[in-house]
Structure formats: C-alpha cells, structure tokens
Image 1 (cartoon, rainbow, N blue to C red):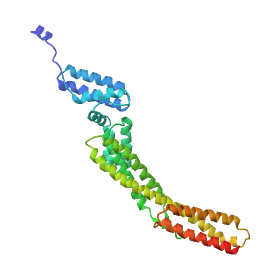
Image 2 (image 1 turned 120 degrees about the horizontal axis):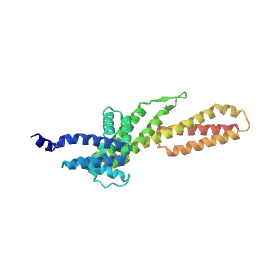
Image 3 (image 1 turned 180 degrees about the vertical axis):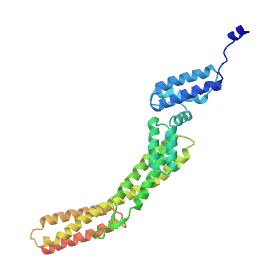
Image 4 (image 1 turned 90 degrees about the vertical axis):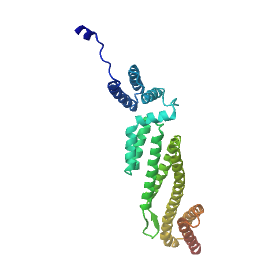
Length: 298
C-alpha cells in the first residue's frame, strides 16, 4: 500500500492556481512596457502564454497583449494589430493616466487632465480614448482661459481712454493655442467608430470658437496699437506749445507726419464701427489740427 502511494503521480495544479502567478507576471510585463522595456516584456509574456498553453487555457486578452508587446518591439511605426485590439492594449498600458485624467476632468481641472493625458501619449501616442480625453481637456482649458479674459475689466486710464488689461491678450493666446492643439487630437480620436460622432461635434464647436477667438485677438491687437498711437499723440500735444515758440519745426513736422501715417494705415485695417476705428478717427482729426496750427504759426 505504501509502495503504491509512493508511485502515485503528484496532483496537477488547477488552472485557477496556475493563473495567479501568470497574472502577476502579466502585471510585471505591463509595467515593463510602460517604462519602455519592450523586449523584456515580450519575453515575459511569451512565458505566460506557454504556461497557460500547458494547461490548455485559452486567454484572448493575454494573446492580444502578447501580440501588442511583440508589435512594440518592431518600433513605433505602422502596426499590424487590428484597431480595436491596439486600443484595448493601449488602454491596458495607460490605465493609470487615463483614470487620473478622467478624475481631473470630473473635478473641472482641465489643465491637470491635459498633463495626465500627455503622459499617456508619452507611453503610446496611438490611443484614441486618450486622444479624445486630451482634446476634451484642452477644449475646457481654452474655455477657462476665455472666461478669465472676460473677467478682466476695461478701465479708463489717466486720460480717460479705455484700456484693456494686458493679461487679456495672454489669456486669448492661451485659448487659441489650446484650441489648435485639440484639433489633431480630436481628428486622431475620430478614427474610432465609438468616438466618431462626439469628435465631429467637438471639432465643429472648436472651429466656431477658434474663429471667434482669432477675431477677438485681432481686435485686441488693433486696440493696443491704437492706444500706442494715443500715447504718442498725447506726447505731441504736450510739446506743441513749446514748438510754436520756435522757428524750426522740421523735426516735429516729420514725426507728426509719421504718426499721421501710422494712424491712417491702422484705421484702414479696422472695421468702420469698431471702438479702435472711432479712437483712430479722433486721433487723425487731432493730428490734422496740430499740423494746421504749425502751418499757421509758420
């Protein structure tokens, strides 16, 4: 009886007990892939596949991840994987960044979300979900910048002229930059059928808002140039009395003529009913009066 027991085969491990170390090895391979150690991860997943094959265990997800690891070993070029397989593998690899990005978006922290999703792209820049979330984060970040620009009041300066807070231009530039960065990301995500409609809506919204921001930036830049003309005009007006006491007005006339040309050229670029056009028209009349005063004094 004892001899029979000694010759009895050892019990085979159950598939469930076999899966535990395999799952640990798969997680180690995932972390290797995240750090860029692609060949090491591929070898580790080879062993995982072989281990499950011995127990005749079919694991479709493992096969996809094994194929992804080997595909990554060929470089960052065109992939041989089906788009849905590639996306599932990228979501698996970048799950920490995607989850952190989604939490940041839910907390209305789009700039933080964008940083997390940039980190996901640093691991693999072919993901469609990461691209969509990144585009959404940049779109919200642009809207926040526009809100901050709207919160900056237009106040009168010492001469009573309306002056826009200089930070408005910075906020508008940031909004424009975020919108433009979101466009290629949304286009990349639109290749995923499950995201196509949302991406098309996002791209249409961005196109409208980007056009508005560009027009507003142009108007802000024109107003800044008009205010610069106002500063120079004010300087000429303060020195006009001193010039009338002199016999040589040549340099003053030349500088005044240059200011008149600046005002005229800038006014040609402004819409006729805009605030900057009205300011420039007033300045043009003032410069013309100073020139007539000099002619009369001569």
